Length: 212
Image 1: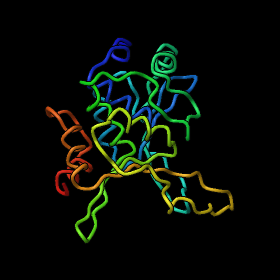
Image 2 (image 1 turned 180 degrees about the vertical axis):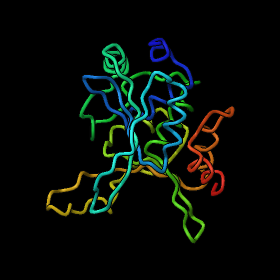
Image 3 (image 1 turned 180 degrees about the horizontal axis):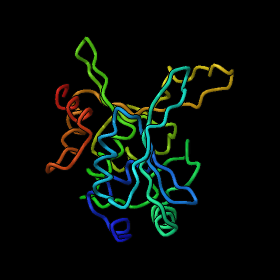
């Protein structure tokens, strides 16, 4: 059912958020790969796309530690063409992620919830100055999120200092950028993205409501 990938719905918007942050296209189709601790999100997407394949776990070494991930794949040339041409999702997009399409106002909460589940989070601090954030290797993506969500006055987009270190093999690590919010603006973000009982990753949703 390719129509589900062509016309705006809350579910498609949420899925596009994942595709922009943690997804990619290949000659065979489209794929989303995430850490095993958040497999519940792929389970949710798999129910929405019963034609998809949920694969894994895959084990790999990252920064000297073994990690485990799962992948959701939807195969077919037509699906790949929809996401490449209609939605602008490219292969090898790391560092070049952006939002290349117009987003209807009623769709923004669902797209942002997918973006947040993919590349967002919360920081709990002992001094009660908790923060929420979007993080990406693409400054352009964070600028797009900021521009679409113009009513939320987050802080300036900044380079995350702790991610400027060298890799163990001596190669320079890719810069990461963050757009962060204090408690007041975090509450606005929370109330925007968690609407009408639609799915959001339980780990992040619980933390957003507990901290803000």
